[in-house]
Length: 357
Image (cartoon, rainbow, N blue to C red):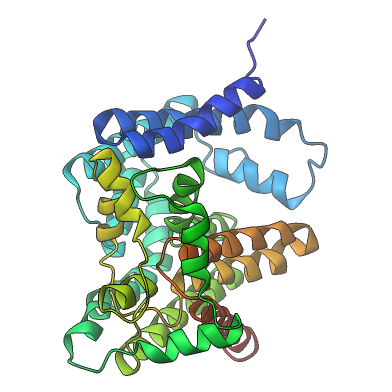
């Protein structure tokens, strides 16, 4: 009789990811990969038991595993994909390599070519190279804002935040009540994990749209993502704004801890510090919050594609937003402005640019 995974397998897999993040080093990477593989294995068994086999979610799952594709993947190819991903990401983490979006595209195409999927590799390049080039240009320029000598804005954000919360700063309140320096709790790890998902999940969602051959929606998502990035870049250049941790460092507000680095200090690892530095963090890019803007775009498109049943996806941008405030990376004002930017650009693309995407 074939052994099937139980809820114990699921719980163990989910626990391995934060434990690996805390542990750090090679052992931590192995734990995280084992947890991810275990979670995927669990989904591969139980998602196929869904009754709604004609629904979009079931069809989406079949596309991911290759069942509804003209180029179905055999077991060896699926194993090769998993092995390739494990080796690639293990190497990147071990050597702390910074991958730009164009390099990510390169490795993705290389994987497809190695599997003999030349036609898909060509389509992948055709659809993703504009995305890669524009985001690459954005990535190269966004660090300029803090080097132009433009006045960095501190007090306006603090005053706006106090106006919203009756003289209080949510970051200070949250850290005073829930964070203890030198002690890392499970919710500190959870907040850090949420914070790190702001770019990964929207890009994965774009890939899911792409493999379904929904070209119109994929291109609209791509256009929205790129326009949001450049709208934010212009704002960073014209109005460089300091996040809470930087305001604290310069004496504008009382003690705030940069919890991402505090976690690394406690465990003497480089996991979160590495993840933070890999994205070329711009220290004066608080407004608008792309940490919430990107997943908010993803939320809007999931509602559009899956309908009301996708509404729980809103927990992703809200969770990332809450984590950003708790970790000292953003004010609530930044998050609200990020949502406004994302929504406005989404509506603009939908109404004005959809016929040209």
